[in-house]
Length: 215
Image 1 (tube, rainbow, N blue to C red):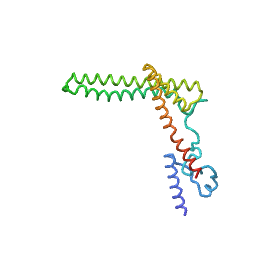
Image 2 (cartoon, rainbow, N blue to C red):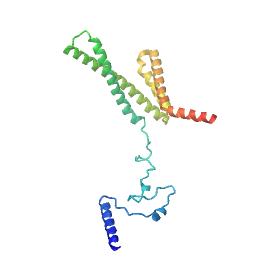
Image 3 (cartoon, helix red, strand yellow):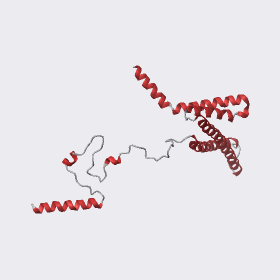
Image 4 (cartoon, rainbow, N blue to C red):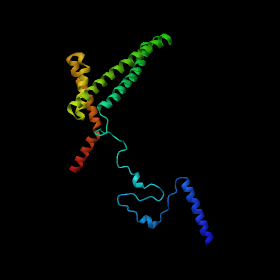
């Protein structure tokens, strides 16, 4: 009837008005209209959105990089994080070690201000010493890594192992030839272990794929 039509139109207009007020005033699509939307390789046009969902698909990276820039940070950028992280780690370890040493050296003293001051001095010395040691090692490793990368013109695990070996040798250069050899072996072992850990997924993936080919 005319009254029903007017009521339906009024309710439809009221709903459309609320939809426009809250940002959802999208036109209603019938099944016939939706059936004509192509679905090959794309999402259909949603009847509940004002935006075509095809424009919401992100096929590329969200970051804008300068021309010729790498998507990952190089050794020079990572050097600051490496040096700072090693200094903080050394300070934390030195603080814990200083508390242990301070309590051990002052165990015969009663809890008093002189004992607290002595423990605090030991903690400060140990924290500064370990922070300086690890920071120096990180600085040498970063300098060698950046220099080797610039000379070779490539970034791979060879740079990591070479930088670690040279860092150990130079850090122990004041201890004689044996010290240099021990430092080089220690740097080689640590850098080799790090390179192995970084490529563990690739190694296990390649081994599993080769074993599957055999069977």
